[in-house]
Amino acid sequence: MVRRVETIVTLTDDLDGSKADRTILFAFQGASYEIDLSKKNATAFEKALAPYIDKARKAPRAAASGRGRRSGGSAPRSDKQHLAAVREWARANGHDVSNRGRISASVVEAYEAAH
Image (cartoon, rainbow, N blue to C red; front, side, top):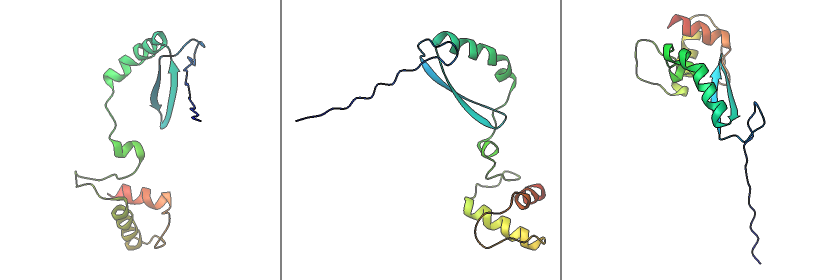
């Protein structure tokens, strides 16, 4: 006996309840969102954002995630290397940091401000 299970996904427009054609992903003030929209509503969404997107600049990936910030165009470093550098700087500048685990946000901010 063969058993086949099918999953059918249908999108419903989050604005008006009609059939949606696609899911749109976007971010605003540090939060990411997604919304299912019909072709008509997706076009209206894109048209509403167009003047802002035309004047905006793309954020660098590192800035979007808050990780891996570097000064002066230096080569990318791994997270491990970055954390080691933060710990070394923190100890040299009187901050108390452990050898493992999370580094407090205040210490990371102080490191970023110094670099």
